[in-house]
Amino acid sequence: RPRFRAGRFAVGEGTTFTILLPHHQGDLRPVDTAEPRERRGSDLTGTGTILLVEDEDAVRVFSARALRNKGYQVLEAKNGEAALQQIETNGASIDLLITDVVMPQMDGPTLARHVRKLRPEMRVIFISGYAEDRLGEIDGVEVAHFLPKPFSLKQLASKVKEVIRDAR
Image (cartoon, rainbow, N blue to C red; front, side, top):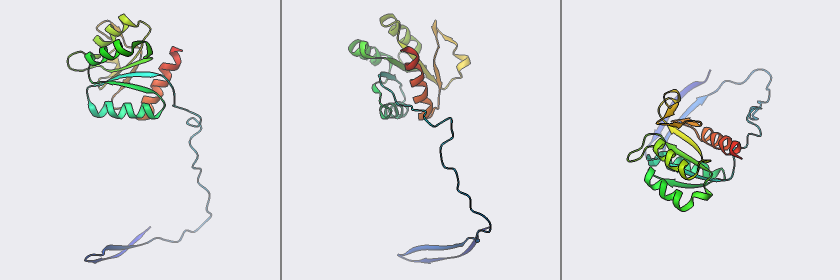
């Protein structure tokens, strides 16, 4: 058990604390610092163009940066209207649409319906703070791929890789 010894403070020098740690008795064994077996080889990098539609700047910026770091080209849109403009400009090169469900002006399901009229084969990942079971089908749009908020970089990259891989 560590023991605390008195601290020392001197103006202009800062504070110094002394902590005494007990001497270890017994055998020392190396700690296995390798990643767990299921994580080894789980390469989350990929290629392809993703249209990311999210009205929350922090979520959009984090997600776009994370996906770019994994090798994807990411087009960003703050709302459904801006996303449709991106589709008109870059539609043929977009492999995946990631859209928030609840957004002002045009929600994610409405956007997905418009996109699927132009590109019926377009894969869509819906992201939302709502539970997936409440989203089963939104206004006639089947929710095949869903990622609940908040999500980690690993969860996002894993879902994107899975959906793009399954599309090919």
